[in-house]
Length: 207
Ligand code: URA
Figure (cartoon, rainbow, N blue to C red):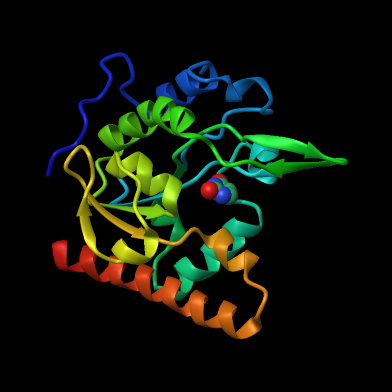
């Protein structure tokens, strides 16, 4: 399996965190509280890539600790995966938001911001060397695959990332938070858990 070539100057996750903290590769650092680096074992076999930190992640500096993170945690557990074994990160490392009254409302990162931030996930993958990367939603899929995809068309398939790494695309957990009907929520949540179970099975086969 191919992996991106590590940046010669960044040889550990702690060095990576330091470099990320000084990132000015796109303007998003200006309005964010802090960078939110990826988190997990240095040689995790499974990496999950979300879109970008939300309000709570921006405040705490840790990925997927807010409402979407709680859904993700529950689904990971139900899929029989231990979150502590997963490297969890984001395609974009700073929170992009716009004010709405006193709230900071999430704004989707644009293609330029995704492209500029890919640099950091390339280094994360080079250091961690995961055997499988799960793209949670369209932004992560675009960053990893280098093209935009329709989630419904590629969901669950084993795809090849732009650096040759195996990538599986599924929904972003915040999609489940947006569904209104209980029946839709339950059905889509079950599909999400099934996607993650299939990823765990792929890893068991590869072991
Ligand atoms: N959504 C994401 O994509 N990432 C997070 O860390 C939190 C919410």
